[in-house]
Image (tube, helix red, strand yellow):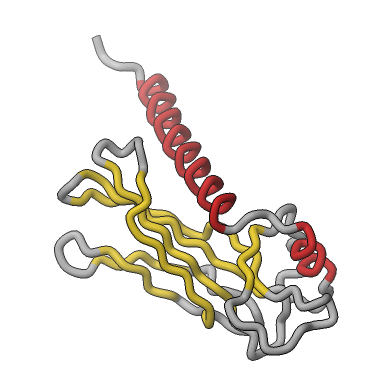
Length: 169
């Protein structure tokens, strides 16, 4: 008996939705654990009418404080970034699977010299279900006018080597 196409399409759609929900859960848990929501930072970010992202009001600011603050600003010294997931990738590796989550953070303030921030998290899993942290990197100094780059491309370097390449647009 032939398999009905509509059932096949629904099955594929359900599988994609399940993977997306899993990615959203892992991304949300990672944001909550490493960059907790900060109401004060959200207010500073959304109240800046000159911010290049002012048209997109945030509902939550997953906050990462700046590592070094030289001058306290008029908001009482609150300096840092509001992070969001910008890309993810799952790859097959010798020991199972590896999932990468890339977050970008826009600076609360937007002078030309203010950088954005990126954070990359890698998770490993033997079966693609139980993800365990494998590595983490976060760094400041990405982007300009306080905005972190959002257009990224995954690059394959050698057998099984995956990296990120920033595309400034």
